[in-house]
Figure (tube, one colour):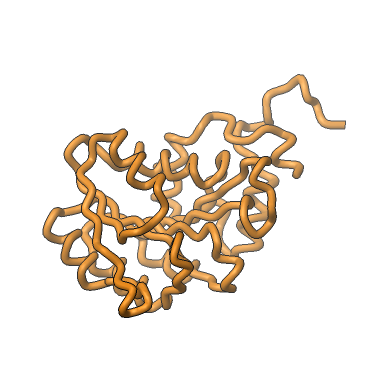
Length: 204
């Protein structure tokens, strides 16, 4: 029986963290778990943004990026996606905008939400290598395109966000996780809720 009257052991859901690390082929120190990827978007921005900082993103993309950037009084630079080229990732334009503004964050979805466009790992890598700050890649729908971007973590400035809400149909359980370098994960962990998951969510 689980001790429901006690706080979760150690604060962090270590059993889930260890399972995710093994599944994704990363170290446990690279995994940060929280109440859905939406909560992790908030945490990333809380950890990195100060008023006046810039966030660069393609448009259209997931609405929560703009909402959370505004909460932190950040400047938002949107780079339009073009239907004529199949909503391809505008790597050069995103990189140029990030360099010009010294953006602390570039955020994107892979595959993109809402266009569903799948971006080649090489293009995402080229973007990460061309920007002065962090690249946040929201992989909420990754399982639907069988794409594994964990190879990008060796760059040191990439944060991958994943969720159990879509492919696993567990949106009501509220479980998401971030993958990053051990250094970035340690900083992100500082702004995640002390007890990020209930014991019910971890067991599920």
